[in-house]
Image: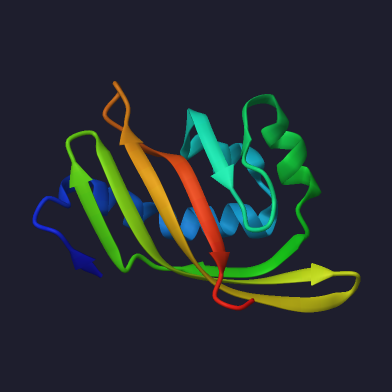
Length: 130
C-alpha cells in the first residue's frame, strides 16, 4: 500500500476493516457491516442510484449472495478527521445458481467520529469492464 505522509491512524483503521468488511458481506451480517459506517453513510454502487438512510437495510438485503470478496488499499490519504482510500476489489456473487465474478475498483471516504473511531462515510465502486 502506498501511503501519503499524512496517512496517519486512518491507514491502521482502514486496514483493520478489510477482513471484517469482507466477512460481513459474505455472511450477510449487515449489523457488523453498518457498525463500520457512520450514520450518514452513502453507498454509490455501479449502474444504479446512491443508497443512504432508511432504504439502506432493504437495499443490502436485496444484494445477490456474495460467495467471496477481497479488496486491498492501494493508496490512502488522511487530512485531519477525513481520509480517502482507493484500490482494487474482487467479488464472486451467486446469481441464479451461477457464480458471477466482479473485478473492479473502489474509492471510499472515512471520517473519524467524536469517539475517535474511524468509520466509512462514502463507498463508491465500479467495474473494470464495460
